[in-house]
Amino acid sequence: MNNYYIHKILIPIDFSMVSANVLETGLSICKSQFATMDLMHIMESAPETSSTDSDATGLSDRVKHANEVLTEMAKEIRVSHNVVVTHFVHLGNPAEEICHWASLKKIDLIVLGSHESDKYNDFFLGSNAYQILKNAPCPVMVVRPIVTEI
Image (cartoon, rainbow, N blue to C red; front, side):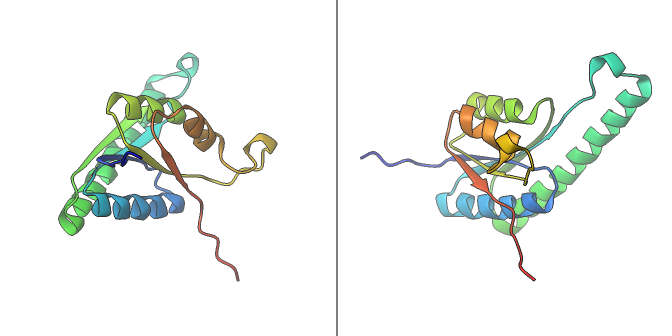
């Protein structure tokens, strides 16, 4: 049996509470495997048919803000945990962009979160997580939301 080494981990971030848990999980794996980390945030752009100058400006502002937040996250990880981190903001379909990036950059593991859904076909996973599991060129670890009981 061949050993499987993890050198590059992709962590999609949507700035939710689930993402915080995903980041901690991915960081733990990075540290134990001496792997590098790619943080990625994907924004779905508005359809081109309804695009106006104000829509484009709003999208540009959101991209800039997301990049600033990721820059701070990456800096904190570098300083506090001595992990090599790169970060990116992409526009498009999240599942497609994540799978494309993983293939392009030869990612060894994707660590992502799954949000609850009420659709029948998304019973166990969100639709993006399902599409990534189905199409990713590498192993995928899905981190479910932490459920606290009262």
